[in-house]
Image (tube, rainbow, N blue to C red; front, top):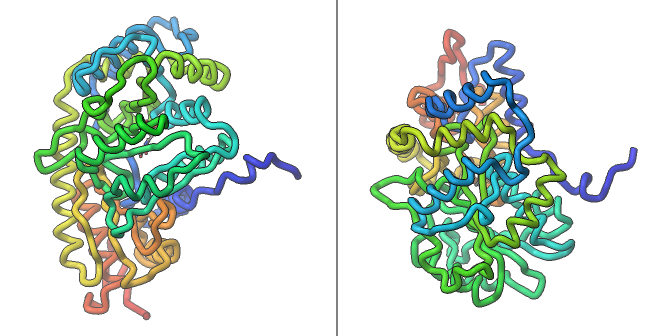
Length: 404
Ligand SMILES: Cc1ncc(COP(=O)(O)O)c(C=O)c1O
């Protein structure tokens, strides 16, 4: 059978494969602990459910404008004013099927085949594949000092004649690192000077800890006219615990938004009407759920850190935000794929191999689940890896005895 070059180039996701294996194990009654997920477990805002239900109850669920209904654009404009102190017009906004689609159509609007998009590593798993879907090339940038915090010099070294865009995701999936404000200022100015598109993937910008405040990239832009190549992406998935609704957006110059809309109109005709109404409810309704989610995540992070710090051989950097911790397990196994598989096989704990995010020897551990799952999950991992752990472990009523 023959497939397109692009179709063949897009990698199978080891993350999804592990998820599938875990789901199969669970369906067989295995006590799987899922520390691999990327979604908060709290309820979506009641306002989101009410507004979506109201539309459904009318039965009038029709096509919408491909770039979003006016009420949702208005809500995004309000959000942009509140969090970025920037006033934009409806033509500066596109609503998409998740932040994922907003980034995808932005890249499709920007990149020609063979052109390059640069992003810091470790990176979100979808960036390289999205670049491939455009026939373009993703260029990861590892910080020279080995940290999770890139410096401008690191990025500069990878920018060349084919570079068209830079993506910055802060706080970052998978590391939880929130880049310093000085770095955001530098990268905004650098991209302006080099005439590069800068996509700010701000999907986790309100889920930050230790008293940090969201960073407003527009503060550092000299050019805020319609020539600006700054694209700010956000969505309801993470902050409002609405992952399955599929709604995100981008704010950018009007010409780019028009091209993105043309693309999106032929791909999906825009996001579902029901979901757009839900997002209006989330954005315009009671906001207390976001702060309470943030607090829960900060508490979960602290629990996870305490457990990991008591784990000899694991090197860990406290996440500044998100709900991911990217811990160095290379003392146990430098091959993160093999290690993740071993943890699933031996003790039914699912974590994500760092290689998927561009850095082997690490595991991404999510702390968006329950404290019980976090503590028990780490205890099980310790049992597999730590030679000082007791010889036996109970998974529910099943007794495991170490045989290695
Ligand atoms: C860094 C990053 N950007 C974008 C997304 C996509 O979010 P959405 O659910 O809005 O498509 C995710 C989801 O995991 C993410 O981690």
